[in-house]
Structure formats: C-alpha cells, structure tokens
Image (cartoon, rainbow, N blue to C red):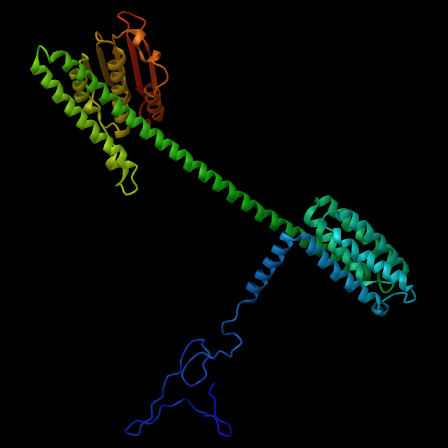
Length: 457
C-alpha cells in the first residue's frame, strides 16, 4: 500500500526507481514475505490489526488461570459474586420480561419473584450441598412448569447438574439428570405447545451437554492432579535416590579409609614395636624397621590422598583416582605384613585370568582386613595362612586362617567396621563370607570368601 498526498493520484504500475544518469529506469523488486509496510521505507505498518497481536487462545487461557486462581484463593467471595450476578439476572427477567414467553402471563408477580429467588439464591451452596440445592430448584421448577410462567431462571438447574457431574459419582449424576427432566415433562403435558419432541428433546440435549462438560472438566482436573502427584512422588524418589547414593558413597569411602588406615597403622605399630625391641641389641634391625615404617606411611598417605581426592568437586573421574589394588598386589601386601612381625604364607591356585577390577579389589580388601585383624588381635605367637584359588568357571575363593588366641579374636573386640566392611564388599558381588573362630586345633580365626562366576555389583 502506498500513501499519496491529498489531491494526487496513486501510481498504477510497478514501483520504479528514479532515472539514472543515462535516463534509464530500472524496476525495483518488491519486498517479499508477510510484513506489512507503509510503502515508503519498508518498515512494518504498526496500524495493522495483526501486528504484535496476542493469540486469542493465549488471552482466554490467561483469563481462565486468573479466574481459577481467584476461585481457589477466595471461594466464598467467588460464590457470593457469582450468585449475586445470577440473582440480579433472574430478578431482571422477573420484572416483566418473562411474560413474553410465558404460557400463562397472568401468574402472580410475587410468585414469579419468589420462584426467581428460589432458582438463584440456593446456588450459593451448589458446591458444598449440590443435592440439597437441586431439590430446592426442582421444587421451584415444578411450580414454574405447573403455573405456566416458563421462567428463564429455570435453566439455572444446569449449573447444579454441572457441579454434580464435577464432584459426585456417576450414578448420582444419572439420577439428577432424570430428576431435572421431570418438570419438563410436567410442563409439556400441562401446556402442550407443538409436538412432544419439540418441547422435550432440546432440554434433553442441554442436560446431556452440561453433564458431559462437567465430566470432561472433572477428568481433566483429576488428570492434572495425578500429574502433580506423580511429579511430587518423582521428586521425593529423586531426593531419596540422592540420599541413598550419598549414603552408599559415604559407606564406600568409609570402607576404603578403614581398610587403608587400619591396615597401614597396624603394620606401622608392629614395625615400631619390633624396632623398639631390637634397638638395644640389633641396631641394624631397628634401622630396617624405621625404613619400613617410612615406606608404609608414605604408601598410606598416597592411598589416603586418592580417596580424599574423590570427594573434591574439581577432581578427575573416580576411576582414575580411586585406589584399585589388584590380585597381583597380594604378594607385596603379604611382604608388608611379614615385615610387621606376623609370619604369613601365601598360596595361589589357578590363573586369575581377566577378573574385573572391582572383584579383584574386593578380594584384596578382604585379605587385607583379615590380616590386619590378625595383627591387632592374634597375639605375639600368631601365624597366618592365605590361600587364594581361581576356578575354571570364574569363581574366586580366598581363605585366611591364623593361629591367634580365640580370646583375642575380632569377635570379642566390640562393634567395629572390619567384618561389616568385608560383608558389604562381598554382598556387592553376591558372594558369601564366613568368619569365625576355628574349632579344631591349633585354634585361631578363619575367614573364607567366595565370589561366584560373573558376579557384578
């Protein structure tokens, strides 16, 4: 669209650019797209009715949300305002408009006003007592049909039908719809204007439509409530899963720190006691004990730093930082225990093959904890035996026995995390762990671990 000054004629052909220096005229391409322009500089025409207009559905949705929000916050005031509006409409019709469609225009005015109030005022309690309100409206509807006043306010029964469909069982709704049709049948019988179906069927359609609308709104409300409840349950389950994951991680770190610190401190204690005993007579042995204490301490610090690094937010992936001793490290483990003063013999039967790192760590930690318990509780004359076997089907069995005093066994040391940690590690791989005193001479303690084939955490 091109604007022209008053009194001038609008151009009829395609828009042309001003002539160039050589007098030629070139056609300029029209702008494409749906943008409305004013024809001068290509800017959008803000006077267009569609420019920046909000969709009607968006406005209606926002308006409905506001109404529902007000209804939810102040239901009494909403019911009061709505009932007042309906009472006003019913009284306006009772002022004389009802006579234009009445079957009997000579009905008393006071009766008409009373029926109008009976149709509108009880709607204040339509949500809390819908059946009682429907009974009052049905009584007024019967009087309305019998007298022939044919008041428009009788259609307010549909509001109660809607509330019954929204809140009460389906069987109650069916009886309510049937009851609302009774005054219609009375009016059609007393004042037969036209055919029966012309008076009865439109009311039937209206009642059915309102009842279906109430069922649709009820279904949508229940569906929304179920979604909200599901979201709440998922949020609770998410929080529970997070707490369980946190507890599991804390238990895992606690097991690692217990195994690392407990074992290494037991070794250091044994080395320190042996070095103190040998310092007076064998200075060279004391120097070896001090050197072994230093090596064990540095080893413990290294593994402890790895465990603590896992808890850092800026730490690399856990798989790179977590301490992962393997079954091949059983030899150095036994050597360290021997250096602490506990005679240990190690027997390995079979080939470990390609055991997963987690299974190897579980076996290693169980052996480590069993030897640590022997160091702490076995007594000075104790000796230990470690036997590890690998079956062809992938089953791993480890048995650790010692000859320590049963009175000094872990069972008599009170609550601790040693046996608990071993059982937790075994349960991760569906294995079995047996720990208890040996009943056959020479006594002592026995721990037996068995991890089945292809067990995964």
